[in-house]
Amino acid sequence: MTENVRVPSTTRTARWTERILAAVHRDPMSAPHRQRTDALIAVGAGALSQLIALTANGGRNPDALGLALLVAAAVPLAWRRRSPLLTLLAVAAFEGPYHILGNPDHGPLPQSLIVLWTVGATGSMLRTVLTGLASVAVALALMMAGHMESGHELLQVCGWILAILFLGQDVRIYRRYVASLVDRAERAERTHEEEAARRVAEERLRIARDLHDLLAHSITLIGVQTSVAAHVLRADPDRLDREAVAKALADITETCREARTELRGTLEVLRADSGGPPAAGADGPLPDLGALPSLVRAAETAGARVALTLRTPQGRPAPAVGAAAYRIVQEALTNAVRHAGPSVGVTVVVEPVAQGRELHVRVTDDGPGPRPQGGAPGFGIIGMRERARSAGGTLTAGPGPAGGFEVLAHLPLHGTRDAEGTRDARDARDARDARDGEAVA
Image (cartoon, rainbow, N blue to C red):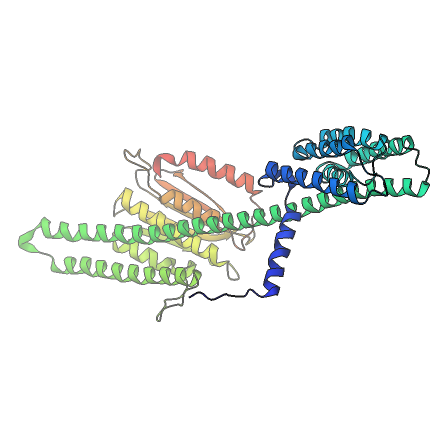
């Protein structure tokens, strides 16, 4: 048993309204089933013109030739959207003899209105004006040939011709306006999606940089400290220096504890950035300039000799600047210990320059300098350069003036680049630096 569900009249009205608006908004040249629709319109216009000619004839019945001309005038409407002007000429070619033979004047009205509407709705304003003038001239000539003496009727016919043409032109302008709004909304949606994709890519890159800096530094120090403990065990097993082994293991434990703490802080920041609730016991923001002494102590536990010169700028620098400086020093120390050995001497200088507008970061070591890499290049120098760029600064890395390796960064203290020029100039310098440091990346 089925139940008849009654659709509310308001719903049916809304659906019909949507269909009518969709038909009005749709471009007639791109509508689906254009040819079939136009053929049906041609058949309907021919039948309606026959009915008008036979009923509203004012006492004049059309003859067989007049009825045939009415049908012939409706046939070109099947191609009205493909060639509007040719369709108008074809309809006029059949309507002219129809009027000259004295048939009822209102008979070909459907064909005339449809073809004039089509010309106005599919052409430019200039074409519509020229078509209107030509149509008015032809209509006046035909009516004069039929000995029509009423000036009022002449004005009425001319007015209808121009009104239909320009009504179609108004609808065309309205459709173009709606299409521009739709196109603008689609572009805005695409831009929004591209911006979201760009933000995701930047977030992935930031996560990769954070994890690389943290894990590379900690794993390098743990590897060096483990090597020290292994060397002590192998050097003289009979006279084992238990204190040295215990110190190396304690350094490893401390490095693991610091890495775990910093990793947890990094993940908490990422969770907060993604909108998730911060977990209990969060370790606060990422380290900045105040955490540089701890980096130096960690490198010294691995055997490096580090001289730190830290001059804190007046006022609090931008958080991105402090984090970038910390990560640059961290990665530079990691590379020095990894490539130059645990006994390398490193000089770290962090100070404001350019009248306090920039932060100068320089890390130099006394190692053998850059060596060609046989395998794939790493991401250390690339990550440092990205760190500097994210803060609005620049970074160079390469052989030092007195040997060894040098990392030099200039970071704007408040996120501006007054002294370094335009963004294009910075990009050019970064590209040059990337070529110079490709062998040691």
